[in-house]
Length: 330
Image (spheres, rainbow, N blue to C red):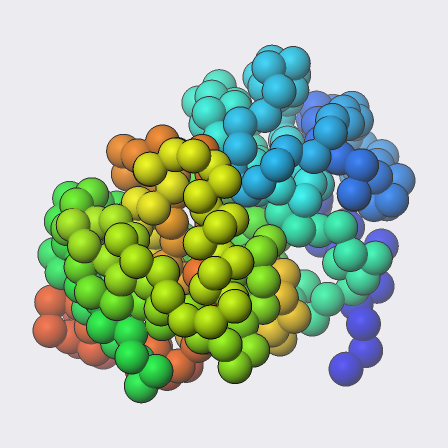
């Protein structure tokens, strides 16, 4: 497969997905790991007539760790914010406040690789995929109970009652983020209701790639109470313990990847958005429809799962079936 042309990708990201218009104020955030991509996006913004400001800061110590106050203040004056950062700006108060002021936000966590703007995920047909992503998000919104299982041993139930599904279609909007080629439908489960077992078989972006060393996470009353397995489990448990925050163990999110062009590579935006992959995240849920504010937010990614909503099959392996969900109007 031919790599994507970075210049075309930048134009797609800002023009089509980011809806940058002549005279729009764009704030480009970066850290020391992503500075090599700044000029590409600055030039793309200039070609579209945008007014681009660039702001750098030291990389945050984890995904969802709050941004420096001066960065949050700068975000309030932008029309379009691009988080070209290693850490995920999605799960931050600064992002939510900027969107409340009317800004569009594109979050591109773990974009530090030299080949980031060449990756296969950028080849997705965003217009064609958007309706299916929105339909799956609506199915999540209408459901009361979700049950996730896998042949590896995942068996997890959670209440979704009263929660609204998120449709990340790549396109910016006023109520949620774009993550570029990161296409998914997701939801924050009702706190305290999840129970069962997660067997992680793909990756934990920003931490490790699983390989054959599965991680087993036991969930009781909405929290991870045991993390077991081999060396990977030990590493992940120590990593979470270092945040010294009990809320980091909150079951924060259920998501389904919906980009058929993604090929697993250990990066967040790729692995969690491989079509049919399932993400079950721990930590902060407050900025995606939940109520928990934790020190960070980390996704566990698994392949080959089944998801049943209120007794109706939605996902089987990498096949999404919407036939039992009617018109999906709420």
